[in-house]
Amino acid sequence: MPCVQGRRTRRTGSLDILVASDWAPIRAFDPVIRSNPEAVYGDLLPRLRAADLRIVNCECTLTRARRPVWKSGSVFKGEPALVKGLTAVPFDVACLANNHVLDYGVAGLRETLEVLHRNGIRTVGAGLTENEAYRPLRLAVNRTKIHIVNFSEGEDLTAARGGPGVFGWDLARASSLVSTCRAQGGLVIAIAHCGLEYVPYPPPYVAAALCAMVDAGADCVIGHHPHVPQGVQWHRGRPIIYSLGNFVFYQSTDLHWRRTGFCVSLHVEGNRLSDVELLPYRITDTGVQALDRKAGAQFRRTMARLSRPLRTPALAGKAWRAYLDYYGTAGFTGEVLGILERMGTDPRKGAAMFRNRITTMQHRELWCDFLTRMMAGDRPRCSREACRTVEEWFTRKVAV
Image (cartoon, rainbow, N blue to C red):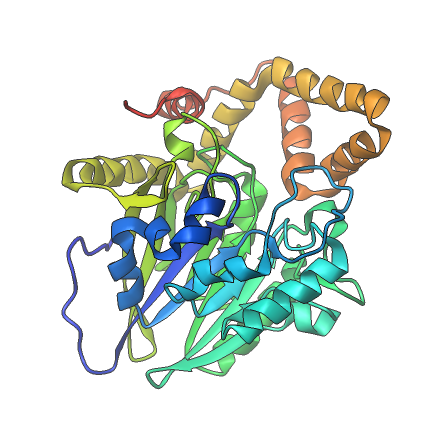
């Protein structure tokens, strides 16, 4: 993996693009951002500010709206004034193709767009019309043309279909837009919000989709949504980074890998991606903190381990099957029975949960893959290393 560990020497015509994952001024981070927005970035702040272009996934609405939509999962929002958590860096681009930007309906999306644009933050991946939602973002930084295509699974039927929504799971359209951007010259970055949460390996449908973006002409593909780090694949000599883990997104957990994430620094020479650097950090109760030398070295060894199965589709399939075995009959039946019980106690919520399981790729593909594996009877063996890694992702605690 061609990653630079130290600070680079900048050259004339060079460019650094920093990509971060999920950001939301919620839970324990609300009061931190409210009182001192710079503090939530800890010792990462200088590195964030040193980049020429900073991109983040805005994993919430910024709105005064009070009535959330009925949906499968949690709803997130911050008050519009908390946009100062983004302008404190400042972030230049907010990706909005995710499963939370419509948590407060079209009114919440509209206000979020207004707040971000009013504060000089450009957006991509969602809009008030279908064309706006699917439109790539085109920028010029230091005389380098940059194209950003941002899409997501469109959970809870949030994909734009003739009206407001997000850039949903339309891979043909995404590939076509990437190809069009490629033909216009410059650097093409595809950013996808997709995959199964908390799992160390991408499902086959995600691997196929992100490889297709490279085949269409993307110079780099970056993913988020799983809330844990996943590995890096080099496809046709171009990097696919499957999940950055959490960023400024607080979860009340003592699990190590849900409290660990990384940013990606893309180094560009001319119009060519010349280097990729991973910037790992720990997520604390007050913000993010860069890993020290020892922890950083361990993180990079772990990333190498995570990335090994991604070298071939066969190895990646074995790694995914390790999660299917961990999920098991107990996981599947527990999930189904839990939804059915919810339908009895809270019918609208239960219906939203069930609908999402059969309409969203991450859930539907998990259920189909698991049931197919169960039907196979004499199942093929999984990689021992992958089995140990899956267990680690669900059990390893933060060191006290």
